[in-house]
Image: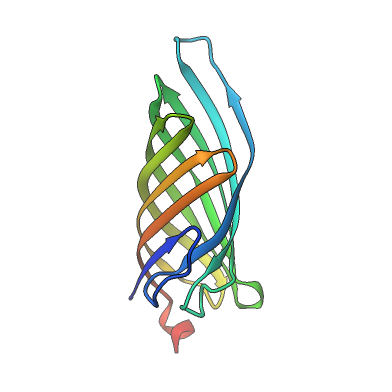
Amino acid sequence: MHRSRREFPEPGPLDQPRFAAATPRHPKTNEPTDQPNHALNIAEVHGTQKSSDPLWNDSKIAYRGVTDLLNGKGTQHGYFYDNHAEAGRDWGTFEAKVTTVGGGMMLEGTFKFAGGDGQYRGITGGGKFKSVMKSETDLECTWDGNYELAKSQAA
């Protein structure tokens, strides 16, 4: 098992894979008319990981999620994937509680690996994460959890 912590934007120690850059893209907000102060948002984020763990260094991440807010609080759930170039890909799901703060958003939740291919085939694990969106283009995210590669792939 490997304990990992991923964060924007600084590289970290061996047990802390981190993303070097992340760019939220194309936020789309819809305000349903069912109740006042209700907002639905589709979020898309892309970035490059920097890590002292060679399995994660320079991998590309993307996630897409749906945010449902009422009076500035709510949930976000969605999917992520990491592209490790020739080594393969991993992917999974996440869900979080969301709070708006000033002009930004704070998310705290859990993630779980659902699968992978190449060197990441059979990956399992998951953990917790915390994200702070200071604006539509400034995001900081810390992922803290465990992953395990299938024995045949780890040997």
